[in-house]
Amino acid sequence: MSENSGFKEVFSEYRVVVGFHEDSGVRISEVWFDAEGREHHPAGEPAIRQWDFQGRLECEQYFRHGLEHRDGDHPAEIWYGSPKFPTQPTSKRWYKEGVQYRAADLPSEMTIDPDTGISLFEITTDANGNYVKDLYRNPVSGEVIKDGHPKPRSSQAAFRHSK
Image 1 (cartoon, rainbow, N blue to C red):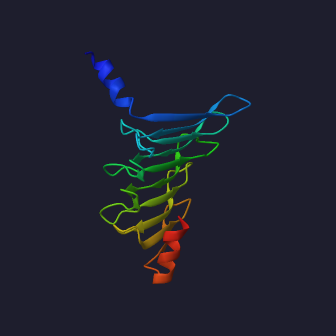
Image 2: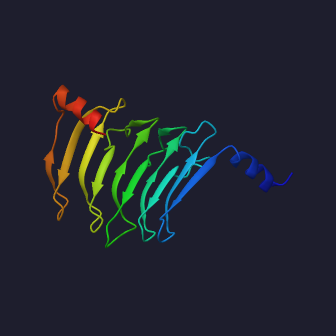
């Protein structure tokens, strides 16, 4: 049996759905599913990809059997969208087994200025996905202008449900 035939057998358990713009024919989405119909890419690539009508990548989302997840210290959700710098991320989120979280008290969500690369807004969550703190930076200097502290319990619940 050749290596290629083994590769095909593994991937035969998966299904990919590709969406195209009805007028232009440009690919606008790609979603991978496992045998149970859950979002999952067998090779660890993004299970969901979305493009704009000009074919520029807008979003990549990594899933493990239906739960947003990416191994290592890598974001599971990456959004692009700056007309000037379309390949630069504008937002990143880290997930572990479906919970928005990043180890070592690092931010689990970042909004980034694609022109400068400065992280303008960050949210840190705990291992259960609960809000811990937020941080705002000056878009020109990168200087911290607000370092948020834990919000009252009612705000934490509102944060979790707004996702």
